[in-house]
Length: 172
Image 1 (cartoon, rainbow, N blue to C red):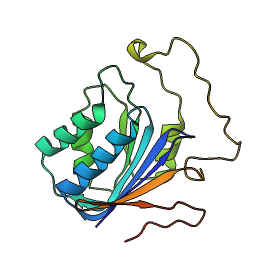
Image 2 (cartoon, one colour):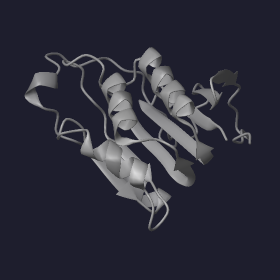
Image 3 (cartoon, one colour):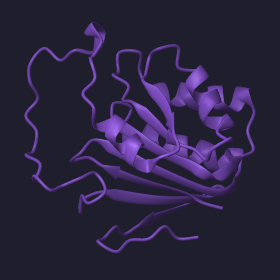
């Protein structure tokens, strides 16, 4: 089954949805996609509630290392949406972070989104000396309604860019 990724640069968020049995190649492909997009500082919502990952701890550690980026890069928070009684992949990922990134597990999408929206303290090593000018965000805009977000579908070792619109659905 595929892994679906949406990146909203306006809201600095990445949404990842995995369904079914996920192979190490698919996880590696998703990690590579995020590495190439240069989004380690973006908040990430990872929905693995409907997925079963066929990976071991060493493979999770390799993926986490790839996602770290450069040591001086700020790392955004990661909220995992898991099914009750499951979440081994999410727990394994959280164990690799050593306090370098906020990671939390949720069984409610609403709670995961609310947690990601909370302001976070930035470690002094990652603080920005001068404010960064950003595009103003429309008041009713959310990361999941950003019309400029980019989407990609990863299935096995294949990758396909997708159009994102108001009625976009996750292909199966």
